[in-house]
Length: 61
Image (tube, rainbow, N blue to C red; front, side):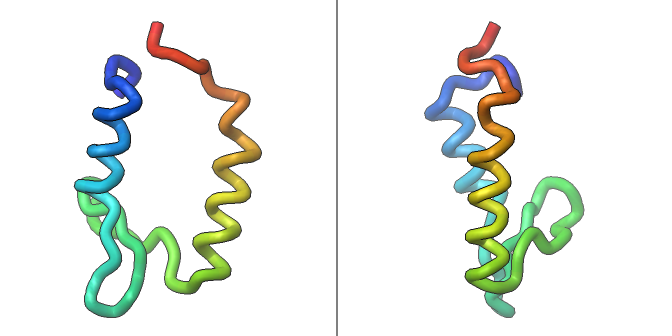
């Protein structure tokens, strides 16, 4: 994953994170466990991801 370009990672997210027929956000590759089930949960997830983003390297090494 570290070797993926930003575009490749975005495609990975689009390919693997889906909203199912129950309107639940799931990640398909790791068993389909729910990620979020409400808009409030999505917003909380986005806030958390924005909070932790600076902890990661900015580019592939």
